Length: 285
Ligand SMILES: Nc1ncnc2c1ncn2[C@@H]1O[C@H](COP(=O)(O)OP(=O)(O)OP(=O)(O)O)[C@@H](O)[C@H]1O
Ligand SMILES: [Mg+2]
Image 1 (cartoon, rainbow, N blue to C red):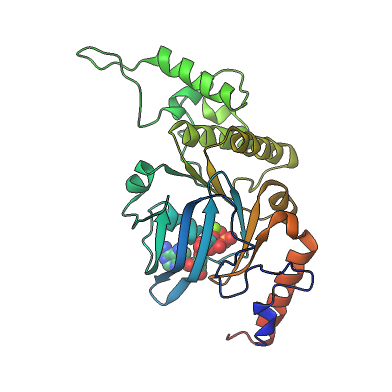
Image 2 (cartoon, rainbow, N blue to C red):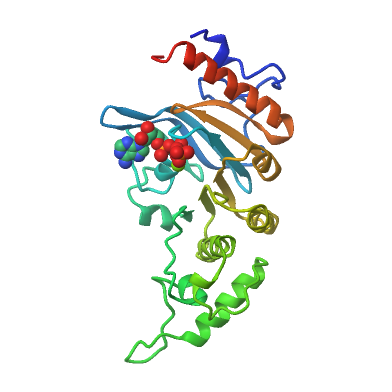
């Protein structure tokens, strides 16, 4: 393959954007102090190299959008950040500290929460119950009875705080739309004091109205402050709207990284198209 095709980010690219080496440059790095820094992350599953030296940064209070083809390694990267997988190589810094995330519980204890695509909600249970799943409030006394009144009130308050409107927190989750369910899952993660929120394709299989609900919610969370967010996305236009920076992954590498304001849908499509053509010309590369 012609190396210039992957190392040069595109005709209209702003100078300083990241090339195929994945090393962030000064211009594409976030302005804020870092919540997350990953250096040269490698993840192998047997003979498959899912991540081939991925470096990333996430500024405090920043929204980073990750784009890329099927199988590019996006979910694997997020699963390393949630402690679900451990990297084969490379290092992670969380809030400035070098950290090897041992498990999902370990990552949670550090304020890292993930909303997976399958959401992990208990559909037959009420909204408020779901918001307190596995961390139910119990009443004082010998019987440790669930404090439904307090959970109801706190769930309603939390949803109200972040502008999620549901008819009643007593409704079972199965009665909600996909967008509302996703909103409840995000609210639950935020409610658990997340500092770093990871969303793996939160808008997948959603219509424009429902996607709008989640985009608005993420924007409100950003305005409230204190939360850094990584979103894996498919739609370039939505990503550029919502994310401060975007990162493009292709075949286990970061091939482009840029502030959203300094790139465009046309430029991103151009990069992907050229990469695709290069791969067709030399599929074994
Ligand atoms: N647990 C696993 N065991 C073996 N291979 C895996 C595992 N998880 C992911 N892979 C492989 O790693 C590569 C990256 O997968 P990953 O799920 O991270 O891609 P992705 O970018 O999230 O794709 P998609 O857009 O389809 O969700 C793929 O080749 C996939 O088959
Ligand atoms: Mg995925």
